[in-house]
Amino acid sequence: MLKSLLGTPCNHDSFGRYCSKCGHERMPPRLTFKSLIEEFIASWLQKGFRQTVFGLFIAPGQQLRRYIKADRTLLVKPVSYLILIVAFNYWILSLTKGGAESLTAVGLASESTSGSDPVMTEALVWLMQHNFEFSLFQAFMLAGLLRFVFYRKRHLSMAELTIFSTYVLAQSLLLKGALNVVLIPTNTAAPGWVVMLMGIVYNTWAIASFMDGISVGGVLRALSSIFTSIVASFIAVIVVLIIWDLNHQEIKEAVEVITAPVTQAASFGPR
Image (tube, rainbow, N blue to C red; front, side, top):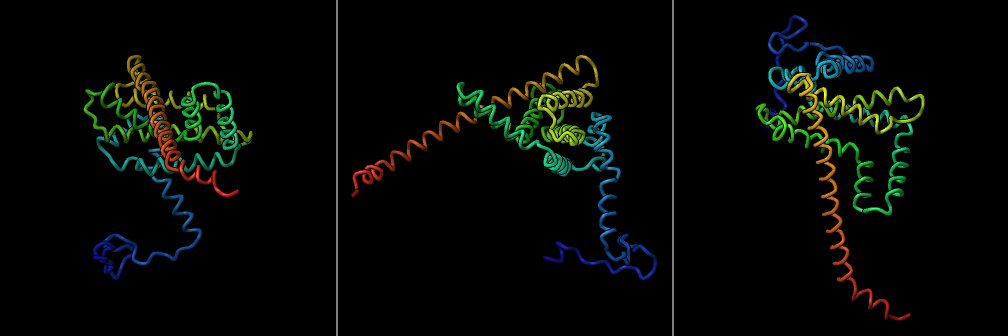
């Protein structure tokens, strides 16, 4: 069983640099730190990585259509690419005051909305603290709206549109990270409204070029799908928080009822 999982080693040819049976190098050179660095750089500078990073900026619609319909080796796999870009963003933010500024913004939002609806306050604070999670949920919501509402006649599956949304989300985060790289000398993070505007512009271009081609009608439809996904995602977050708040309150009341006799006994106990 273990051999079937690991595979049996090839009995290499005794001549030539590469084996004619498996194609591997017969006697690879010893590993050094220099060779490890060179292999790492070479692996990320391969055609697939260049096509993903630069191709999704230059022609996102064309690249994603080719990947989904024809060539699955054209781009870096979507989940791997998203994880890499998220790690890149966290690393760049660690070099600035982005984390501290986010916590300050959360505190200001809590104070400014303290007299309003507590659920809305909680939703705003949650969004500021979990921006990536909301973006990921909104990307999935966008895929559903593209599939079942705005482009239901395109005959694209939910899985294909989820992959499309994942690439678009990763590329939007890469734009955010690139902007933060430029701002590193100022020790500040990019303003939220600038990041949102860049994301909307790129998402609009990607959706329009992927679905209809760049036209007035295509851009308006793409914009409608984006804003609908943002509003729908925000409403979903509020509904979940309301349900959680109600359940949380019921749990607190149940705990109080259960612990009431113990509390009373303790209060009347020996002093």
